[in-house]
Image 1 (cartoon, rainbow, N blue to C red):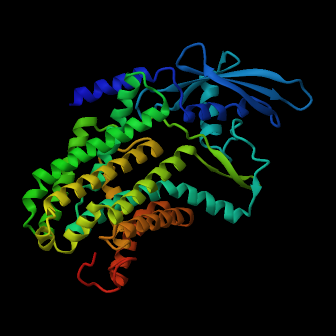
Image 2: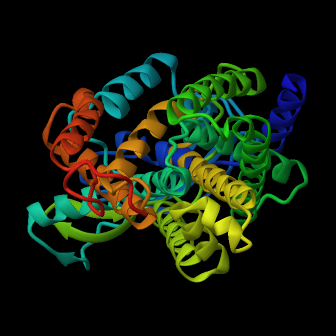
Image 3: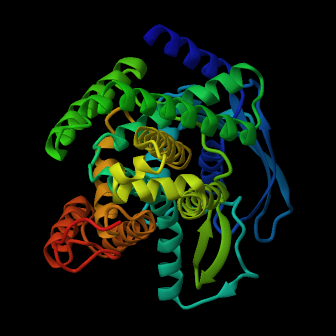
Length: 443
């Protein structure tokens, strides 16, 4: 399997030669102001390949005060290819066909691109002069809220998976974070297969990534239910919890053997910032891919809620959650209801893994553990067993994280999230949609 995965990644690397993602184009554009005098007006005219297919060339026009307009070029070369972590790192550049010396490039990268106190201005970004002006505090809050949308969608999906299973049988499965990592890996493989078949449009790649991740996660979820959980039907919740912890460790090791210890990254698509509002020099932006992925995540969670509320399976799910024996007397097969719930839960976890990969570039084989724990906190906040409450809990966790990141030390954010769980269990064990006191489970 390791050899097969390496071959697929090689196809991805070969297929991606000569292609530049928006992060690479933006990194090249950021170097342009340093190559021109201060107060020069820079207008980007075009982007394409340079002398070689692996060199990015940007054509731009400059207008310095009191001088005639000039047409210039910048050529950028990047380190790494395919899915390596350093794929997008700027490794060298040439201005108007003249390569920059190693010493000059080192000074440019270190003191202008990486460690400059004020971030360099991207000449490819719209100045936003015609945008609506809002107060600085409101602009900052809106920017933080837009940044939290993808995380909220991810937490809502994973928390819904916890609620879907716990609401059915009162058991917590600690494998859903690893299923999101499995979906992330499947998304990388799906995109690699897409590129190897020369079906390389970003939309088709995203579609196939979701299809492959959902199918792979659902298949593994079915196998987990049939070969592991089916044998624990008569066991108590602690035994199931311990078994799923062991299964999570095994699944993480399975992913490590399949993809290797290195992170696998996908090239970003549709992530050019769109200016929305402004407050003095601060411009509120959002990327199309973050809005699209957040919309897909919330749509999937909403569809799950409607499916449970209005379908025949939803009625069977509620019947089995109330009393499985009585439901079986009325012709409902509790085993089939459990199997379908597990497949749905694992499928939406795989979809959450795709969102993580598309937004943040990738997820390591062990990246699902922390993600799964935070989603469990969201499910508890919403009243574990309630799918709508789990979605609301995901929104609360995402908002709490972004608020903490904006006002408090970032390295203490995860501790604060887990402390929020402890406070909730003490003050309101039933969550938002449960009882204020610790009472028998109500669905």
